[in-house]
Image (tube, rainbow over all chains, first blue to last red; front, side, top):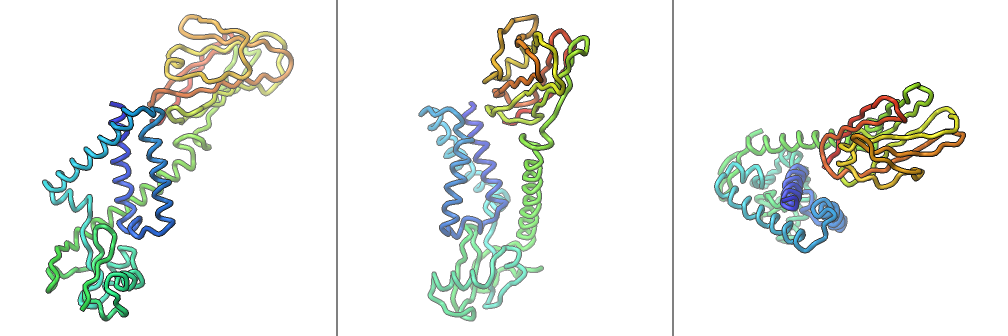
Length: 146
Length: 171
């Protein structure tokens, strides 16, 4: 029982913290983000496992996490509202070549992020070659060229 | 702020009002995170000025009084101390400290410094006896709580009155 509660608590707290941190937090995966992810996993692992290093405890923790993930996917299917709160929704940041400055500010992205995504995905050179840019729920920016 | 819906060509559902609420919730969440971090810095989760507390423990005739430093907030399976110390020098003799069974049931006594001369099972608790020469006595009990939640303990010095203290153990 203890293992289940620990794993479920860690799952829910991490879900909440990463949701609050925003979708851009670990989306870029710079080398420092990668290190950050490792450190966070280490800190969370200790809280989840405690001082019980048995196979049983490890398997129970993994089962709980995977089980919760499956459960959450069904919750998101049943309730579109829950889906939007948990995953967020895509945000249009460039519309018909026009920057939506206010939305970009709130989403904490700037022109350079959009241009970087345009270069990486389509090899575009300038902002006026972009028709739409959408900040996806994953944190990535998808570009639709003109 | 308005977001045009169903912009031509792009099949994408965008609810501007919901997005703003989401961002508002995010900012409120940041505030909560900041409050939690500030509380941690002040010691609301242990190890800080708010967490440190002291009670005064005297024997029956008030001949000997000790200050007892303890942590108001601590965490499960985490070392915490009870430090008994005397400001002024005391006469030679014996010093005994009593702890109740209810408290000892919720914590593991990891170490007592100095080692007690002997321990004695008494009504409702355990009495630790120390021999005392001249000087200022300092006794440190190191504990690890193994139950989360509020924890109340009491202490007696020699045959003095019981002094109670409360702790909160975070899971």
